[in-house]
Length: 40
Image (cartoon, rainbow, N blue to C red; front, side, top):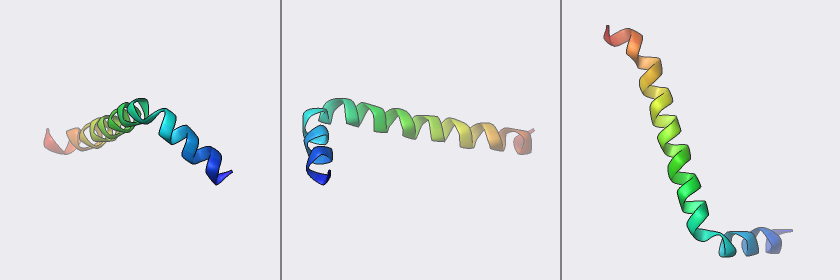
């Protein structure tokens, strides 16, 4: 199973990077949206 996971990561390295970047941006937007009421 670990070998399969490593193979998937090796094959889809570029899309994995894009997915990670998307997840980070979604988390940043969530944090900003949760702090907006305190700013107003």
